[in-house]
Image (cartoon, rainbow, N blue to C red; front, side, top):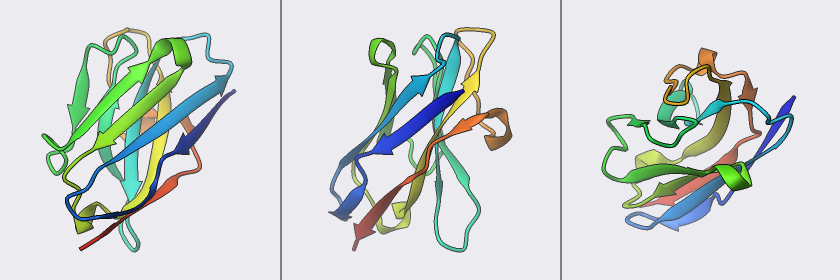
Length: 127
């Protein structure tokens, strides 16, 4: 079992920045891709960003491309989401997730690909 704990959410003004962290613990002795998703009130959960086990491949939703950066520190079993130029429409609960990978360069874009989820962290952007 893998446990994921997000941190770093909060309230920020439009144009500001936040950095989310996702710490993995438990049985992490396998390759796993990591991803970030978000869910705004009344809306479906949507993909934000993903990174491969090797850290060499990243994918982003079009709405966050060039503003958000996903990264990971494998030694710390931690993934990050640096969010810059935040907009009011970025307001949501952000979830990190982990997916077992058979290839070190695989990324996963669908929520159903992920078997492990964190509890979420609220990000509120005021306009």
